Image (cartoon, rainbow, N blue to C red; front, top):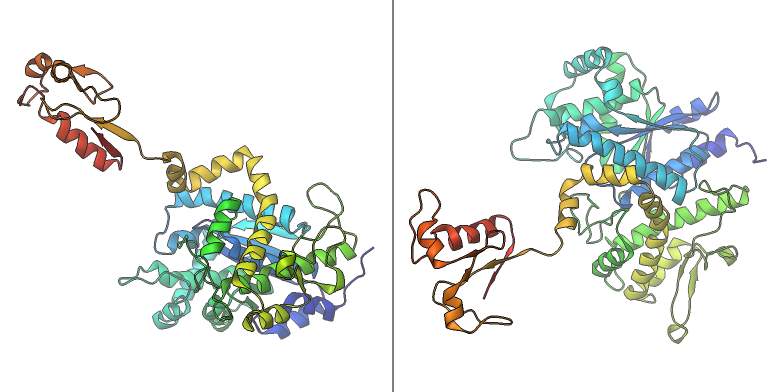
Amino acid sequence: MAKKLTADEKYELITRRLQETLSGDIIKKVLEERDCKGYWGTATTGKPHIGYFVPLVKIADFLHGGVEMTILLADLHAFLDNLKAPLSLVALRVKYYRFLLESVFRATLHVPISQLKIVVGTDHQLTPAYNMDNYRLCATITEHDAKKAGAEVVKQVGNPLLSGLLYPGLQALDEQYLGVDFQFGGVDQRKIFTLAEQYLPKLGYAKRAHLMNRMVPGLAGGKMSSSDPNSKIDFLDPPNVVRKKIKLAFCEEGNIEENGLLSFVEAVLIPVGELRKEFISRGMKSQVDGSDLILPKYVGGGGVGGGGDGAVFTIERDEKYGGPVHYTSYAQLEEEFAAKKVHPGDLKKAVADAIIELLEPVQREFEANEEWKDVAAKAYPSETAKKEEGKKKKVYVPPPPGVVPKGKGAKRDESAAAAAVPAVVEGASLTPEQGTTASAPGQTPIGGLPQSTLGEEAVDAVKHDVDLEID
């Protein structure tokens, strides 16, 4: 039976590896009487990427510390953020997010989620009471404060919409309507958190604590973003795509600044390995099939006997290059990379292998779930269309009358070419005789062919982004 944690031990779990904590004394006071309640919200816009591992691993800490955790799928916020998607599409993305988050907790992190609730924003944000409080808040918050609070979260444009000013206040009100003691988010949410601490008490509501994790840089440096495909890796990216993106990632030898790969090791890979070690020590089982848990391969070799000598991360190398290197802390890895003792190519391979290992259980569940696949296709139609399009279609366009076709398989007999000119419509043939008598309404035959035969087909091909096959 697992040992019952003290209030101090719970607080340590709740606040470890955070970049900043605001009003942490609120959490300490609550823990003296009961377990905490917290929430993390995410706007259901673009496809979640592996940067989501950062908050999800931290939520695993919260659950481990006895927190009653709520994940808010903020569909209304997604709609308000510069109209990134219509509500009908947002509703489908809510379903996609739910499938994905539950799969990550269950199949990759193996976190028991009995204390986890996943709720949708519009379930409470459209109620009369919430709307009345929104009006009260609008009568209290200045335009300056609302704009400042959303500066790092709401998309900034030249002629901003009023919806961007509502966004921060709604996020603050969610704390009250979800009945939590703290809100959790990235450090980019700090201005919204301080606005909540300032304005909720003015409505007569309690001040909440706010916990912030660090932001993981994208693969090319800067923020990892769903809108920039080159900066992130999606949860459903296949291994070859993961390796390709990692290969192109910025990772200058000896440079530890804005190094997305090192940051991912520190913020995700090592914490996942440590979490797995804790679960194994407590005798916890797989949340998928109830089997014994094993360490990820990147932790000291992984498997049942991996992680020896306190290793938290391993870089596999050929024996001719010195063999595997086991690191007992992130600081040790960073120090050796800065000293150019770790080659960028070796780090890239190790990180790519580790990411593929973490994503594989989620992708396996996705492939086995027809409903999830159907939702994904409908929630992100542009991506589905690109996959189905594959290679561009080729449309055959005949040569002008009297010109003998050239190229592979072409008839070189001039008399044969003059006898029948291939048409582009449904594979039919159009003879010169037909061309002089069967013109489309309103068209004048030119040179024995309808005026639209070549020109309009070419225009249509351009409009539909297809290649013209002209012999």
